[in-house]
Structure formats: C-alpha cells, structure tokens
Length: 435
Image 1 (tube, rainbow, N blue to C red):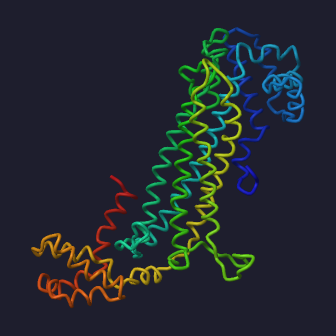
Image 2: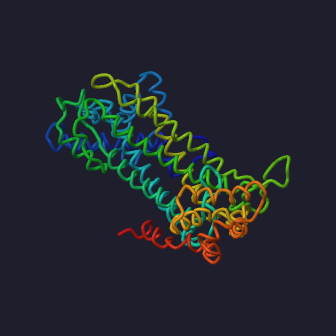
Image 3: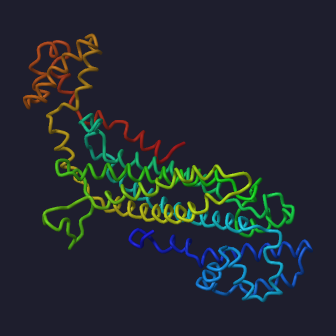
C-alpha cells in the first residue's frame, strides 16, 4: 500500500526483511528437530543459528533470485554464504518451498490479525464511550431515508458497537483458522521428513500443524480470513455512511471534527466536508476487493500450483495494511465526532409531530376502531402535514372522528417523547452487559 494509508507496525510485518527472518527461523528450527531425530549432525544444526543476529541482505537475495528465478533458493544460497556452505548443507532437508512460503504467510497473517484485533478493541472502546454519552440524546430514526420514529444517538452508537463486536469475534475465529503451518515436504506426504519436524517448527512459531496439507496449506482457510476482513470493511463503511448522512447541510446532526487551519475546499472557503468518512468508504472497497481472488485461490490443481501465489503477495499486505489504517481512522472519527443534539430535535420536529403517527394508530385500534379505518383517519391528517405544513397534533384535535374515539387528553399524551426511550436501558444491557 502507499504510505498515505499505511501505519508502520503493520507495514513492518510485510517488509522483505521480516519475511526472510521468518524463513530463517523455520529453517533453523527444522534443523534443530532434524538433529534431535538424528537425521542431521547436531553441529550442523547449531551452525545455522550463527545467523540468528544477522540482518539478511535483501538486495543480495534479490540479485541471486534474478539469476535463479527462485526466491527460496536465492535465500538459501544467501544463508549458506553466511553460515558456510558445508555447515548449511542440511538446511531445507526433506522440505519443499511451500513449507517455507505457506508457513511464513500464515505467521504474517496471524501477526496482522493481532494488530487488527487491537485496533478493534480501541474502536469498540470509542463506540461504547460515545454510546453512553448520548444514551438519551433523542434523534429521529429513518427508514428509506424518511423520518420514521424517534431513537437516540446512543442507540446508533450501540448498534455499531454490537456490529463491530461481532466482527471482532469473527476475526478471532479467522485468526485461529489461519494459524497453521506445514512442513510436510513434496506433495505433503512426509516421505522425506518426519512429522515431528513440522510439530516442532509450528510449536516454535505459535502455530498448529496443518492436519493434511498436500504441498500447500488448504486455501479455504485464507478465503475465510480475507472474507472476514471484507465483512469488517463493510461495517466500517456502514458507520461511515451514517456519519456522512448526518453531516449533510440539510441534516447536520453530527460532523467530523474540523481542526484549526483545516481547509474544506480549494474553491469554496465555507466548506466543511466529511472527507475522513468518504475516505473510509473508499478504503472499504479496497479491502473487499481481495475477497473474490481469495475465494478463487481455493481451487488449485492437484497437490499444488502457484496460481494463488501472485494474488497473495498483493492481497496479504494490501488488505491488512488498509484495514489497519481504516480502523484507526474510524476510531479517531468516533472519538472526535461533533454531535448537535439541538439540530436533532429540530429535524425531528420539522414535520410537526408526524413521528407520533403510529402511537395514534395503535390507540385508535385499542379504542375499538378497525385497523383499516384507524389508518385512514391518521393518514388523512398526516397528509395535510406533508402537503400543507399543518401541525399534526392540531389536525388530530380538529378531527371529530379521532377525538370521539380517543378524547383530547389521550391525543395529547401520544406526543410524549419518553414513550420512545423507555426501553433504551434494556437494549443497552443486551449490548454492553449480556448475561
């Protein structure tokens, strides 16, 4: 990914130097296991660890690969130059390139998942804080973009919290699923390497041995992982879209923090645009872009081909780096989001009481009016509000049929906002303190 949308800790996971360090650890631990089994001399295994503090020369490895056209062989050649050709002659004993490549890729994805889980914890904390802060800040709920009934800003934040908490659980499962390694040799039969080597290497790297790996680790695991990242990205877009709507001039119920010295437009000095959430909407598309290729990587020829390799070299870094940045950016947006409660009330009252229409409808049916007749009575008064700018309460009080069925006091009572917030505590308990 480009530096603009990258954070150093996640980028470091995908640096060539990091990759080569993991390759080295796999080979060194495998040598230890082979020595323990008596397959190779202990002194040769110990000699490999002479490189444990060496910084591998990426440029030299690339130069060797330019000749060999094989990245793992290029690395092994460089390693032999460091520890000595004779000492290194048992390195990679009984192994195949995919043992190194696949196991390393999964180590990188596990490390990336750990950073993403930490990102999600920060986002969840921000959403919970804002939910509690605005627990009873009333705003209008909308369906189809049209005023529906009152909700609270706290419920909006709580809804996003619950969604992100589900995503965190999904990511934990995806991390578990991807945390496998394979040191099973050509076509995965262990013909030239003992399964104990795989167990030892995986234990040292914090992985589980892949139960059956052919010559590659099954890519359904990776499809699951990248699909999970795609779902998280979609949830980020869900939050971002709501904020973008709230910042529209005609709505202005909330807006991104606008810092001192910030400029909104090169042409229009008055502009304060939702640039961060628009950016998040775009970044979500990039993360989701990896999902279909990851799914298509599942179907490989026989025991191995490399059609998945070029895909993963790109989607591994790009998806995790982008999502890491997006989660951090969204957390900052939520923490600093400016809320306008007065505008929320003003918007809710824009159509002068219409949001209470269902309460009147239900009251009429409770009073013995058929649902069809009750709907007609409420709707005819509501349409005068829409079309003529009338006041809904006043229209109801002037409607003889409605007054006859309910009485004036009962009509007045149906405009109490507290009716719509009476179960907020129950919902909050379900979200933040489930039993």
